[in-house]
Structures are given as C-alpha cells and as structure tokens.
Image (cartoon, one colour):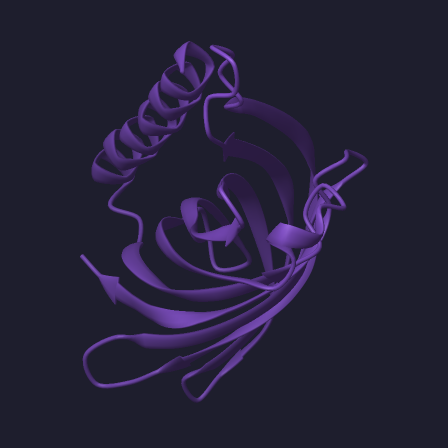
Length: 178
C-alpha cells in the first residue's frame, strides 16, 4: 500500500508540475477520460480481457509534442473466492504527425506502472491477499477528432513492454480543453 501511495504521489506531483508550468507558458491543457479494454496481464487467466475506466491530463509542449499522464482502473475480475484488481499509471509523450481540419494523429511512447492486487479468503489463519507492481514501456498511437465541446479520441497501445505486466490496450473517450 505504501508503494501505491508513493506512486500516486509521484504522478500527482508530475501533473501539478505540468499544470504549474503550463500556467506560466500558457500552453494547451486537456483533461479527460474514457473506457479501456485490456488483455493478458501477468499471464493470469482471471485478468484477461478486462474493461476499465481512465482519467487523464495532457499538456501541449509545442505544435508537435505533448506530455500526458493517466490513471486506469480495471474493473475487478473474480474466479471462485479470489478477486483480481489492476491499476495502471502511464506517463507518455505524444508526437503529432498529422493535424488538419480537426483531425490529429499521433504516436505515443512512455512509462507504464502496473499494480495488481489479488484478494482471497483466509485459510487456516493465513491471509491469501497479495499485491505486486511492474514497470514497463508503452508504445502505440491514436487519433483525436475535434468536436464543438471536446476532442473525441481513440488509442491503441502495447503497455508494460519489457516487464511481466504487458498487455494490449484499446481506449476511447473525450478530452476537454481547460
């Protein structure tokens, strides 16, 4: 739990720093969220094909590059008396390689921190709950379409590359300029 709180504090610190820097530079900031679908985490069958929700923030550094952070919560999966829960913290950079008439296409690369918690019944006085975390790399891309009130986005990425928490993630949602 201490590790989770430390990581969450680090992510919040980075978001605050980006926000503070953005206010000084008057850069473009977007906050948003959406739904995600992930596959194959930690090679545990009970966690395959998980639906989740994501909250994110993106800061435009210039017209070609953006930095972002997001927190994804995958809905718990159960198998018998055991329940598996997965969180993912992502710190990504985007390279915008196409941006015309409200449509933007970008590549992304970054860092993924996956945190899994397995909870089970107490057996003969022993707790069967445990948690673990894994660090890996993200690689993918996405598209964004400007609507009147927000930007609609879709993303495909491989997360957790190089670690034991690798998965393919499909995400979609809305980003609101602030």
